[in-house]
Image (cartoon, rainbow, N blue to C red):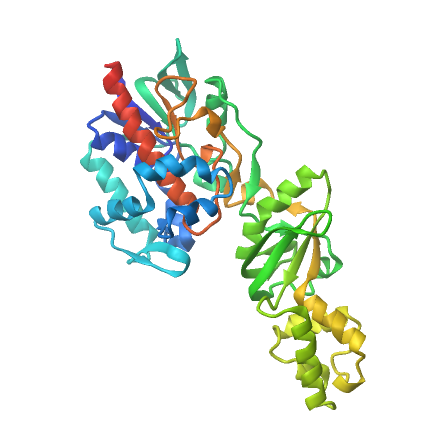
Length: 423
């Protein structure tokens, strides 16, 4: 049995690659080890499927801190706007939400998956489900065949590896593709979790004092050993029983991992600014004014609404202030230290949850060995990579899926074109 193009992996990049190859008239086989295609798509965006992001390309690349620049050429061929047109052509109307995120009007991820599956059917793409791949065969510098776990050998002129990374393993991403990449001579850079909750042994975390508390619109930074911010993100965050989570934390997480590695340290300090629109001196002066206007009021009532109540009580106690104490009896020194805590509360963190708990895998097949216009291997003829197996990663918010769809489109198109050259 021979195909022009075999695509391994039925996630966002694999589905897009199979469609792109099919549109070019290739005989395509899509192989997935699971019983359902598009499982990662179906759970993305909280089950609503954030298919792409409408921000300008420059901004999108900034939101792909892991080798986003590698995608400049790819975006010039197939951009986020092309992704939007592609889905609209398939009958999926999209709407724009905050920060440029694009969702189906139906708010159902499954409608996106169904539209892709329908398109595969129209293009007569063969689909093998429940078919784990055991090996990829290369001969004389060319791809040759795929061997399934049941021993079946299927020949192909081009092979697209779209099996994802190692994050969210219950969707089928268990890192199978790295061995096939290495076998073709590729470098796989060190894998690490990104977009992942951060762990801490701080007493207030261990004692669960703030567990379950959400802080809105805060500024969170990761500091280097000299106390200077490496990165800051202004979003929401959440205290958990093991550390901290929520959007700001997920975005900072890869910088925690990188700092620990770079400076060979076991702990990193993060700094939490719960009042990002005010300077520390301003916070201090505002509190002094409030206290002067109602000197007999308890400090917790004077400061009501400054930050969420649980966090307020926590910061007061942290600075040795009794919440029921009258404002006028508290020293300026204590008010100053409380103001500082509002602006830069340090949290010592010691790592992240494991890669299996991450939303995105950092590291992967080195982009130095991939043709940026085609996603073709520079080392093996007829071999293409797309999606999360590549060493490209971004923040959540439609950036990773954009990368997957764009690289999938290029890989499928060029895998198909290459078969015509080999015919």
